[in-house]
Image 1: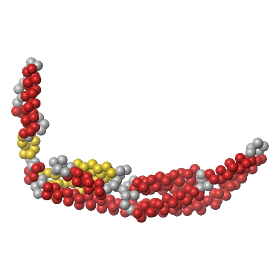
Image 2: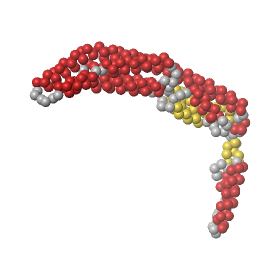
Image 3: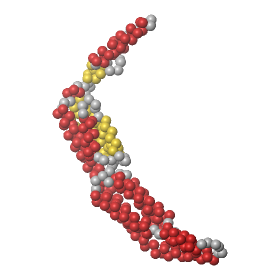
Image 4: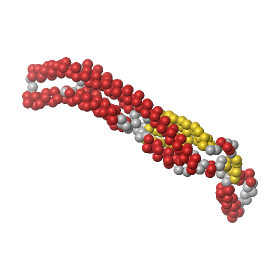
Amino acid sequence: MTGFGSRTGEIGAFAWTADIRSVNGRGLDLKLRMPDWIDGLEAKIRTRLGQALVRGNVTLNLRVTNIEDASGHIGLNSDNLNNVLSSLVEVEQKAMDLGISLAPATATDILSLKGVLEQMDQHSIFDLEMQGALISELDQMIHEYCASRDAEGRALEGILRDQITEMTALVAQARAILPDRDQKVKEAVKQQVVRIFETPSDLDETRLAQELAMLAIKSDISEELDRLDAHVASALSLLDEGGAIGRRFDFLTQEFNREANTLCSKSQHSGLTTVGLAMKATIDQMREQVQNVE
């Protein structure tokens, strides 16, 4: 979801610069910084970004300046001046009613108030035709930005496929260890049973048999390996599907991790534990990469 794009240009008497960048995010968060005097521009660009993107924290900056009047002219804002003068009359009248003497306000005092003097940059001549041309340019920038994200996505796909291939190999290693591991587990259980029966006790043999059966079931990891195989198949299917798969893939890595944790906890074999830890390391790497997937 990371990406960057920029563009500059001129439209009539105006020059503009724009850039767009994004970092990872769970959802789509759009931050647009652009001139508020171009009516309706922000809403149109926000709609276009919403149609093109699904996830990421995206910031678009746009600056438009009048190159024919770059220095600008200082002029009076009549509306703000009228408001200030009306307020001044009201304040002076209130002071007189309370018997308070105020020093007379000078023209310099009034002109120093915010909004009375402002830079006249002829924003009004940025007409609809110019706005349409600017939107077209911004659309092209967004297209190039999305293309750069697509290129990154293809690189990430290769990395994720390699990690899935590694998971497939690790599951195969775990299955190869199972015969030796199962034999050692059986021998350990037999030794425990012998010790139990050699020790005088009033244990119920039926209850003991049930507990041993439950122990055998709990030590079986074939279901975990089967589910890992299923998750591998689902991950490959998501990559083949394409599109916005980031959230689903992120959930799938959580399921990978759940099965790897269970396998390690039920291992009872050093070689199988080593394989389980290797799985967890590969899954962590996969989860880091998935955060970059839309």
